[in-house]
Image (cartoon, rainbow, N blue to C red; front, side, top):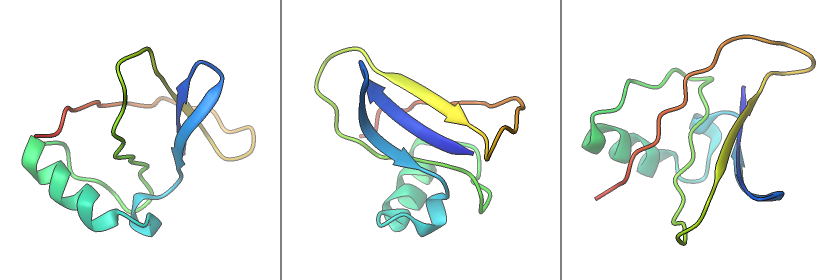
Amino acid sequence: PTLTLLSGSTTVATNTNWTTSADAAAITSASAQVGAFGLANNDSAIIATLAPGNYTAQISGPGAATGIALIEVYELP
């Protein structure tokens, strides 16, 4: 799946596979710090520093694929 973080209609960040992300090591470390579920290789994850405001996390499948998604949001220490 592709995870997209939006502020209004502006894309803040996007990720399709956390293992290929430039901050994969930080994602691994942060996930352990907050007690998040273990990530599978094809899971999507984003670490972002955000200003106060409203945000939307959007999940989309490849092509026209549909399914069920679980989104977890954590505040990092």
